[in-house]
Amino acid sequence: MLTIFIVMAIVNNIVLSRFLGLCPFFGVSKKLSNAFSMGIAVTLVMLIASVSTSVIYNYILVPYKVEF
Image 1 (tube, rainbow, N blue to C red):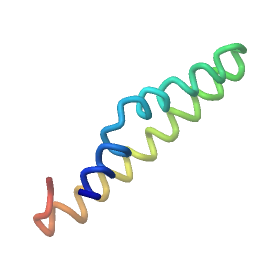
Image 2: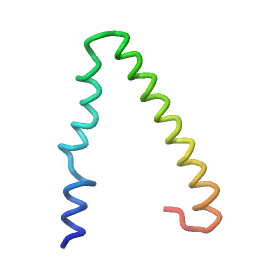
Image 3: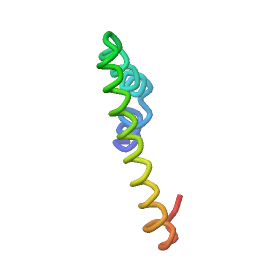
C-alpha cells in the first residue's frame, strides 16, 4: 500500500511533472539573456544525463545482463 502511494505521489504525478517542465519557462522567459542562459543550462544537463545513462547502460547493465 505504501509503495502504491509513493508511486502515485512522486513518480506518476502529472501535476508535478507539468510544473517542473513549465517552471523554467515562466521564470526566465522575460529577458532574452536569461532565456538563453537557461537554454544552455538545459542543453548541458541533457548532454551530461544522456552520456552518463549511455555509459551505465552499455558498461554495467548489458555486461551483467540486467538491462530493462
